[in-house]
Length: 355
Image 1 (tube, helix red, strand yellow):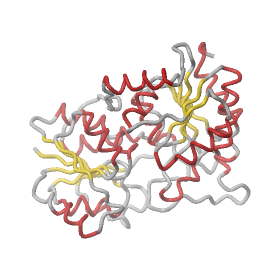
Image 2: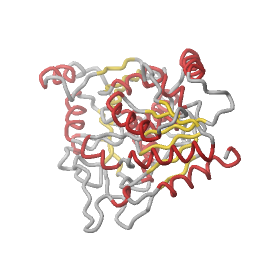
Image 3: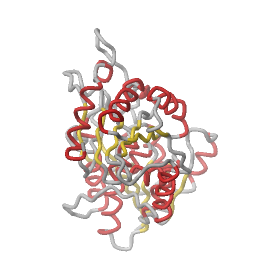
Image 4: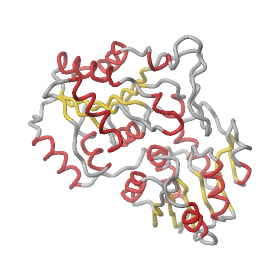
């Protein structure tokens, strides 16, 4: 059986499908499992899992439309089954799956804007459940589409090589970090499409938290983020203004993951980096404003959620509509009024005896 996993929506979403991919390989005899991805980081993760026979990487956002159509049409007739990872509630993703032409097309039936986004083009679906984590939704659609049963819920899969581990050791040694140092990671970025930058905790608050951790815990701070977040990282670094904070220079997501694996804890917005830290089994303080924490909380690792839990939250749902705040008082109050004291308390709680 030839199965195509369509994971176009982001690095974090691709990573959250890896437990389902592991179950497919384990429970479907003689399966050939391929993946279609749009982001380089997603391709890197999938390549390292060893779960996929072929990974097709194509940037649908920047490539000419005719080129993208050609890539999709070359998939026709090659697969018995395809699955759109959860979440993929956009008409483009549903149309790509339909044009790829697998007889069985698995996906979630979304509670909002499903018909408008052409969800009906998928012929094997389960209803979205707002109280269920993304990993469980992915496992459910894999089981329904491919007809197997299991109660297993595996960890996220992102293997780190020995060379990645050696890089982390060399890098930390070059920065003068001693073995007994408490390393705290920060990720202040997030996706920016659909106005998602509004989900970010302010960089000034990350900087204040960093200064407090350096003063009270003698911590060293590693400021993580992608190349598109260089200005944001530099801004936080300048505001912390300490030689105990640094911005790691890495050649890819795996080296970043190896460094995250060395930290005692990661403080992060709701982002793909949060899920990378989950795969590394790190303690995590997730700073969450408008997102449904039932969907995205760190999977199978010790964590705390820093959130105001406002009556209007969550308001960011899986549809193509941009994030928008409808409050009359403070716009994006859920993130703007989340204080450093609140997040620091979550960090101190998770550090426990290390504090």
